[in-house]
Image 1 (spheres, rainbow, N blue to C red):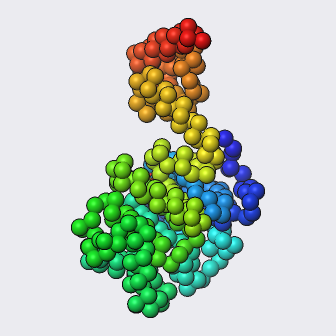
Image 2 (cartoon, rainbow, N blue to C red):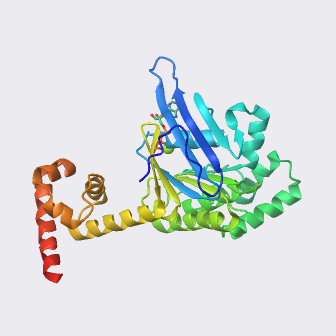
Image 3 (spheres, helix red, strand yellow):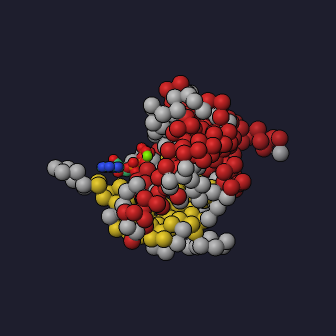
Length: 317
Ligand SMILES: Nc1ncnc2c1ncn2[C@@H]1O[C@H](COP(=O)(O)OP(=O)(O)OP(=O)(O)O)[C@@H](O)[C@H]1O
Ligand SMILES: [Mg+2]
């Protein structure tokens, strides 16, 4: 695990990062209430052409960060560099162009326009760039085909399942061939299968079209698919992990879940506290385990089971 909280994020070995945030702060002020510090000096460096995940507890600033990269909002201080441009120095006109050309946004709740068909929704962003109507219609259909939704081109969003609506939303995000896709919990409202289809599409966009994909997520399934995973806590990016490391940790967690019949929540707590395998848990002082799982009886049960498994492992060895 590497610390990326330094003010100057290191550039990746393969060239300059496509997205770079330097000491970014964002404060929300609502009259009559104390200000909310959503970002408190965030530093982030996203390699060009990578697929990255951003995870962190609810309220830690993930959506705020994505909005700043997408120029849907402006920072209170700090710098947001995207593709060689510093967003805070751009005019409103330049920002409109930037949002339309460089960024494709995918939201958890799809945000399709209800009275437009799938095809009209996908064609809409092309209007900003003044693409002729016939070309818009043609390209919209081809984009829907890419996400397997061409047969539903004339359907209104209310007639689509969540997974189908999200595929249309991805096609819309791709309308102007953006170099960056920003997805805010894109599978958050979907079941495992529909979420898997959406992830495959994002992965394909990254691998085949070279788009940089940034996915904010609470799901443990997404980080292993990404090149890098950033963690945000209390408005700061606190760590960055490479995917092999993440896949190895997920593997350890799965083993512990099965071996000790524990829920994801408890396994996460154990691993975060450094108890990464059955042996470490078997050898741990009971008080320490109780602190970590937050329940003495549960800790005793887990320790007992871990000891039995560890002893059996000795016999097998
Ligand atoms: N427009 C706003 N006005 C006031 N406060 C806001 C606004 N947007 C976000 N906040 C606050 O900023 C903090 C960070 O919010 P943000 O939406 O970025 O968190 P998040 O990490 O995306 O959380 P979640 O996982 O729940 O989506 C929260 O305390 C939130 O209440
Ligand atoms: Mg959010």
